[in-house]
Length: 362
Image: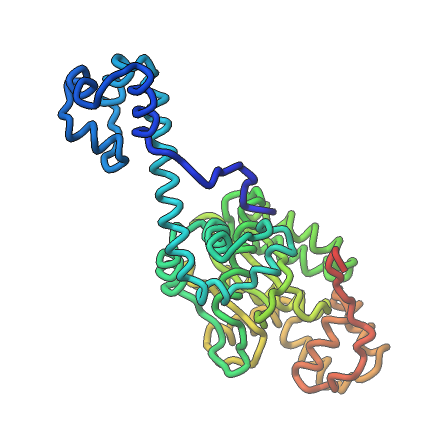
C-alpha cells in the first residue's frame, strides 16, 4: 500500500555551465571565441556558464557542434540542475510547514507501511503531499477545506480534520484498487439483500463476500482501521459518477455496529446526493439525511411492523433474541444492538451474542 518510491535522488546537481567551462579549458577556447563559434552573444554564454540563464534546445544543438558533446546530454544536465533547484525551493518551503505537518498521523502511516520512514520535516511534507496526490500545502488546503462534507453536527463528533482527511484518503486508495462494474442501482439493492443474509456468517467471510457483491454493483467497500483522533463509524461518497464508496472503520469491532454502519452508508448511496461526502459517527444527530439513513438501515434489517411486535414483547432473554434472529435470518448480535439502541435492553446485557471483528495484525 506504500505510495512513495525508493528511487535514488542525489543531493547535488551542477549547472551545464560548469561542464562547458571544463570543455573550453580542455580545448583552449575563450568565452568570447566560444560565443563567436556558436553564433551567440558573449553575455548569454557568460550567463549560461554562471548558471544564471537556462540552456535552451537550440543552444544545446550549437554546443553539440562546437564541443562535440551530444545536445541531449547538455539538456539532461540542464534538466537535472533545474529539478534540483526546484527541490531545494520546495524543501525550503516545506520547512515552514511544520505546524501543518504535525496535524497528521505520520507515525501511524509509517507504521502501517503507507509511507516510508521520513528523514526530516521537509521529507515528511513531500511524502504526505504525494500520499494525498497534491502538489503543495496550499493545494491540500484548497482541496480539503472546500470538500463538501455532510456529517452529524453534534458535540460528540470528535474527529480531527487532518486525521479524518487521512482516513478518507486511505479508503479512496483501497477503493481505487477494487475493480468495479459501473454502478447499477437494481444490482446494488439485490446485493444488499444478499449481504443482509451474510450477517450470520463469520465476519471476515461475510465482509469478503460483501465486497464482491458491492463491486459487482459498482460500489467499492473499504474497511480501514481507525486512526488516532478519528471517532467515526463509516463514510459514503462517490469516487466517480459511476463508482460509489462505502468506507467502514469497525471502530467498535462488534457485528451490530459494523453491519448497521454498512447499511446506513448504503442508504446514503441510494437516497442522497452524489456531491456530498457523508461522515457518520453513529451519534444521535438530528440531520434529516442522517435520520432518513438510520430509518432505512433499520427497516432494511428488520421490517418496522415486525420489529415493533418483537420489541413490545419486552425480550430480555438470550432465548427470545436468538429465536427472533433465526426468524429474521439475522445475526443475534444485531438484534441485541438494536434493542440496546432503542432502550429496550441495558447496554450491559446479552453482549455475549455479539460477534467481534479482529484486525489482521491483532
